[in-house]
Each structure stands twice: as C-alpha cells, then as structure tokens.
Amino acid sequence: MDLKITQARLAGRVGLWDIGIEGDRISAVAPALSTSVATVIDAAQKLVIPGLVDGHIHLDKALILDRHPAVEGTFQEAMRGTLRLKQTFTEADIQARARQVLQRAIAFGITAMRSHVEVDHTIGLTGLRALLPLRQEFAWGITLQLAAFAQEGITNQPGVEALLREAMTLGADVIGSAPYVDPDPEQNIRIVFDIAEAFNCDVDFHLDFLDDDAPLLWPVVAAETARRGWRGRVCLGHMTKLAGLSPTELAEAAAMREAGISILALPASDLYMMSRKDTHNVRRGVAPVHTLAAMGVNTGLAVNNIQNLFTPFGDGDVLKIGTLLAQVLQMGTAQAHELCLDMATTRAARAIGIQDQAIAPGHRADLVILDAASATEAIAAPPANRTVLKHGRIVAQTKLERQLFCRPSE
Ligand SMILES: [Zn+2]
Image (cartoon, rainbow, N blue to C red):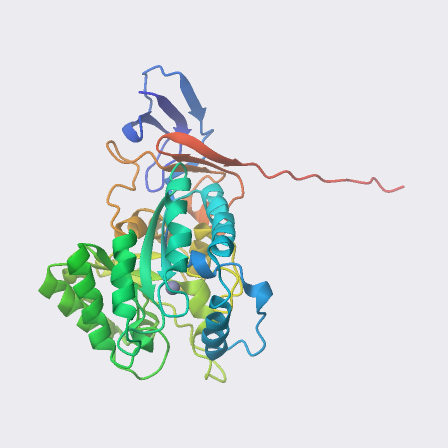
C-alpha cells in the first residue's frame, strides 16, 4: 500500500472509513486499516467521493461569450453566432481556452471528461488537431476522451462523413452527431453507427433536443444499438423531449435500459434554451433522469457549454450542475442527493464507458475529498475546498481564503 486516506465519510455508508491505495488503484476500504504507509491523508471526517466526471462538454467553443455577447438570446442566434465565431478559431486559440477549462476541471475534481469536437466544413479538423495533444498534456490530472462531432448535419453536408472518418483515423475516441439539425436524422444516425463499426468506437448523440413536434429518435438509436451489438457503448445527451412525456409515455423509455443506452442531462443549457415559445408557466425541458434511473436506465448529468451563446453561464464545475439538477428535478431527500452525486461520478463514468469509477477495491484511485460531511451538504452548497487524487496521487488542492475585517463600533 502506497497511500492511505483515513477518517473518510462515504456517501450511503455509515461511520468513518480508511481507503488504501496501491499504485493507481484502490486496494482496500475498511473502517480502520492497520497497514502503515509512508503517506497518510487525514480526511478529517469529510466526504470522499469518486472523481467527478463531465461526460459531455464542448472544449472547442468554451469561453467565447465575450467575443459575441447575446443580442437576441435565441437558439437561432446561438447556432448562427457560434458558426460565425467558429470561422475565426485557430488551433492556438482553441488550446488556450481548453487549457483554462481543463485546469479548472482538474481543480474541481473532474478526473474524466468527454469533450465533443466539431468536425465540419467550417472548422475542418482544426478543433481535433488542437485538442488531441491536450489529451496527453493533461493525462496526469484527467482522462480526456474526444468525440468527433457533426454539429451541422451529415446528409446535408457532402464530404462531412469523410471528414469524420479522417477524424477517427487521426485519433478521436468516439463518434457523434446532432441528428436534429439533419434533414434526414435517421440516415444521420445510421452513418454514425457505420463509422462506429468501422473504427470500433463508442457513439454519442445530441438527441431528442428542443421542444418541437418532431418524432422521438431514441427508438431509432435503440434499434441500431441492438442491430449492431453496441450495447453499453451509446450515450445520449440532452433528451429534453423526455421531459414532456406523460408517465405512460415515459415508461417506454425503459427500453433504453434493455438496449444498454446511457442518458446525460445537461440542465444548464437546457433550462436556458428550451421552451422559448412558452409565454407563461415556462416548461423546464430537463430530462427526468431521476425517474429514468428508477426505471433502471443509466443516467447522469454533465456541463455541456460554458460561457457561450448556448449557455452564457457556468464555470465547468459538474458538482454545481448537480445542485442545479436537484433543484430543477425537485430532488430533496438524502437518497436523492446521493443519486445526484452518483450521476456526477459513477453513473456519468459508465455513460462514457468507464466502469470502475467507484470507491471499491480494484477500482481506479481517482478521488475527491470534499469539505462536506454528507451528500446532502455537498449538493446543497458545493464546497470550494477540495483535494483531488488522480491515479492515486494528489493532483490539485483548493483552499478558500476568506478574511473578515471586523470593525468594532467606535
Ligand atoms: Zn453538447
């Protein structure tokens, strides 16, 4: 054993625990480990959680709001404005912004991340070429997956399929698209699966997004997943349309459990973008991931965008998204808060193909010590103070410095 964390609280378990770490793996979890080790980290009765996971972010278009502040604040403006900005992106520019996000992410305790990277005729492979070296550069603190992402459609963009295949050859980890912008969304989905088969990679769709009357596409994805034998390798982001289904209609989504498909809610973006035509009683449009979890579907939450036209908010802290989700989905019990934490860690990890992001022997020693005593406290007010371990080593520590200058009344 190389390292021991002592006096840790663990979500869903009573008492205090020691966590033994050997190399990059957890070797033991017990109330008191007698083994003496060189390095001991006293958790001081604070909550230790598995490393946070942001399974859906866009590093290439993060932190660009200052270049194009919203005038209309509409989805159309976000599509139009981002496309215009994309024409000005360079590798150095994307890298500078991505590095900022990645450094913050590591400090927040995000130890695994999947970033979508736009691949189309506007940006070509510039985004991917910019981000590929960062995967290695930041491997000490974060496992970064890159998903080649067709944001502007495939069947309507001759040559984009070939570009996507080139992106996979260059080293992208995952293939994905946004079928809702494609005039033939079903063919878009089939092409993405064709590429996934050719490169033996996981699939990630931006799906059933917006609040229009277009038919649900997840049954098409579920059918393709089964037909291609892609169970456990498909992740769906947004899924806002599920928020508008009655309980009876939503019950059909249990088929995604059978298909082994994961869903990530993106509440920061969805709350901002959805239901713009509602004049009052504005619908929330956040996928009911708590209900889906109760149905046995693997669900999680993620950041999506940070400070751009699609989401002019956020700092990339996935734990704060947990707070937002708990508020929006009215998750108030201790059990619900533990589910929220799970959706920001273990379940989000599973959604992006990482099966061992949990505090158990043999699992990866990616951990965060939070300045909170329980899941409820962590979700109520995500603490600034965090100690982050990646591969069994401390990679970040944040300590909030606060000073009060009390002036006694004169
Ligand atoms: Zn997205």
